[in-house]
Image (cartoon, rainbow, N blue to C red; front, side, top):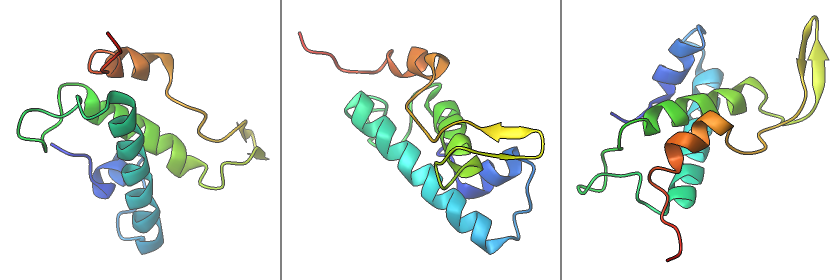
Amino acid sequence: MAVTPTDLVKWLGQDTTDTALMAQAGQAVTMASAMIDAYCRGAHLKADGHTTRPGIDAVVLMASARMLANPEQLRYATGVVTFNEGFGGFTLAERAVLDRYRKKAA
């Protein structure tokens, strides 16, 4: 199952009828998927080339949620919530999943 913009917006508890948010969610999912593809060099996909391996969809969802939460990727605060930075890479938990599939030099 590939992560869709609808999956992301629902997971964040937002309104799926907001077309601007859905468009941004689509871009976030696309970017997260592209970075995972580059990091794993394609090994995150099963033999059919389309289905993701276990755990990959969770990483796409988490990484794209961080991108969608702060689309400008700038430090700012609103009320009691502070966004310290933009997407700076995968978290340790995400890398634990991705490293299972990453091709490394022999």
